[in-house]
Image (cartoon, rainbow, N blue to C red):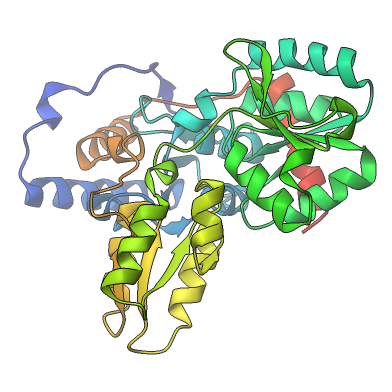
Length: 368
């Protein structure tokens, strides 16, 4: 199946798409989808805004959507309504003759950007000098293709918030220690739940190239945490949990493991986005929940489960600002460009990076 669209780079949103009415956006998006037919598949991440996700052919978390994209063999174009690393994963898993498009190339991920490949190469040299060949790298899928590729080349693998424990169990069967990036909180929370004490963890500060939170001999370390975090999930606090319980002791607190250690420990339960959705979906009518995750998802849960009392744990909005850069103007622009035979905002991973990133992903997939 040959691509007959012409890639035109990553230009800025044309002015003609900026000031349409809601009705015009919706009607033209639907018309473009109809014109493109089976050549197009739109992926929508759980954190995506409602006025965009309603046009998605599939919804899910980042890896789930990338794996769905892998199965869309008849589609010429995969439009990923999410952030940049998610589109990279989709490009890694799809065929060479398919194009993956991110409607707004500025839709990045602050957490993924905290792990730079040059910083990782330097850190790895220090780690090898200080700890020898005792460390295996593991990266959260919320990372760039360059980081996934590094992990793949060094015998490591990727993980999701759902399977992080299973992946770490495998990693410890390979080496004494794990370097976990880019989210220190998921790594810490998962390792602690496995019975690894905080004293056997340390944080690598990539900004000044030094260790933090070292509370014992280096030889005793088992988990090396990259100093990265999610800007959304670190906004939730123990004080917010305390206030919720003071207002209504019957309200249960459920949070994502990207939250800080003290918040996870203070919550009633914690788990991945899929876990949160499933737990609330299976809860009885009348249940009360304070949810510590991205606001678009929390609002959607409340809409889908009116029989329950569902609120955001924080009293202020906690949107993923980069995810929210994907809006109807950018979606319409990319779709109408495809109709006209042009590809804008294509995400393409080079062959060598794809090879080793896929090696890391494939190792994970053999475990789940």
